[in-house]
Image: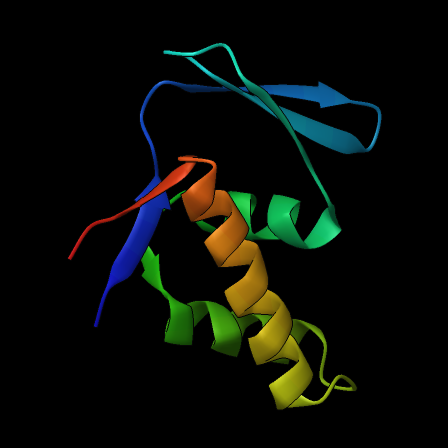
Amino acid sequence: MSRYRRRPGINETPVEDELFLIAGDSGDMFHLDRLAMSIWRALEEPASEAELLLLFAEAFPETPADTIGRDLAGALATLLHGELLEVCD
């Protein structure tokens, strides 16, 4: 099972209740929505998608697991595509 972690060299810039990430190499800036920001914060320690799903299911018990899983998979794909996260088996 693959685990994800924050990519080294990413700088965080909080602005009020929002979070922006700046890639150290390229200087690209990314605005995180609430879900992506929650994933970012949850990945202070590496975690698998299943571990993240369990965490979010506990935090939002009224939300169907399929919805959480779909949203989580989409947000992880976006963070990976932006090279903000990396896989660490």
